[in-house]
Image 1 (cartoon, helix red, strand yellow):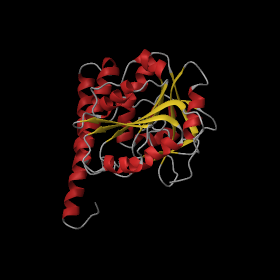
Image 2 (spheres, rainbow, N blue to C red):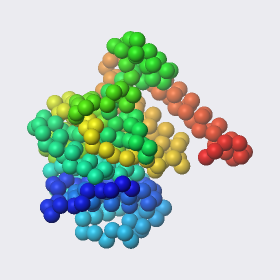
Image 3 (cartoon, one colour):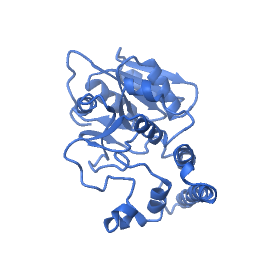
Length: 308
């Protein structure tokens, strides 16, 4: 892990909420970066982990700046985020995945942008892979059914010729802005939010179990007039999928179920009758394709042909 910020005398008015589910020692790396960034508290909400991640964390950080809240089972990401939100009294909350590490000045930079305007309600950092490359999802447009269809069938590649018609909802392939930029959505892996905005918009929608709850919140922030900002110089290293790679079908099921909930809440009125049926069929067709891929891959691994 890279060099981290030396804490100042006065803690920042920001609690960091980390939802853990079998993140292993990555959780400890995450909490370490949070405490060194001088957040007021790291609030770990555990969804019934069984991998010893909490025991290892406790052996490393017997700190009064660390709070661990236990759910008896995996109740979902949004539910756990709300548990952490209710346990905090800070005016700014950072929701951070347990497989993420803040850079030396990442939190301070995001706070600076969040506080720069009363209309900014949410800020996300530069999510990157361990090799430093930008990760998909850190800055994006809303994945409307049309955009999702174009991306699923590779048609978004035509955006270079027809940007208005074939634009992608993911923006990581676009040039990195030189300064903080307004976007439609950021990733729930790193989401800094004002308490005042939460009080206005409401908590996370617990109808989502895993995936798309962050899109839902961004949409609701936009509907209430709150700006969402992407901060390119606030680096956050994210080991994407570390907590779910052993259960790909479970993750994909909830991802597709979440996408349908998102579409139903915000786009159903634009797709009446048969068109809505096509949207639903398209989502589940994509799930069948992804599930088949994972099934074949698993079979090849069991046969000793592929890699796990």
